[in-house]
Length: 148
Ligand SMILES: [Zn+2]
Image (tube, rainbow, N blue to C red; front, top):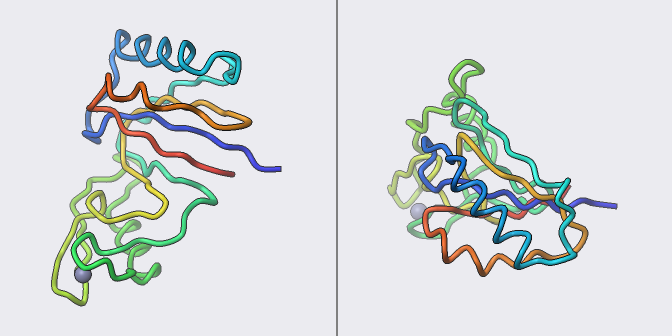
């Protein structure tokens, strides 16, 4: 059996979520999803530095944002390792250059399913689906749906 985890985070990877934002998100989450949410499954993670917000088993590939070609996963993994340090997390300075000559930093690549980078996130484990239409109240917040 797999678990689905929804992750909510500021689209600016260096930005933190304030208490007011967190309670606002929590309120919409619970109000708009009714009984399909177990409030105890909501957790807040402050990573300090920037982390990769992965989509778990939903991960398929990383594509060039310009031409849509798939990047070699080993090349992407190397760039991820170079950019990351245990002390500081990701610096988001590394870029990958596509065969089409377009060069994009790690957080600007086209991840399928969507993944992101953030230094803080709010997670919710759900058994079924989660309605996220209320996110239009928080245009600076992104969401990643991860399956494990
Ligand atoms: Zn390309």
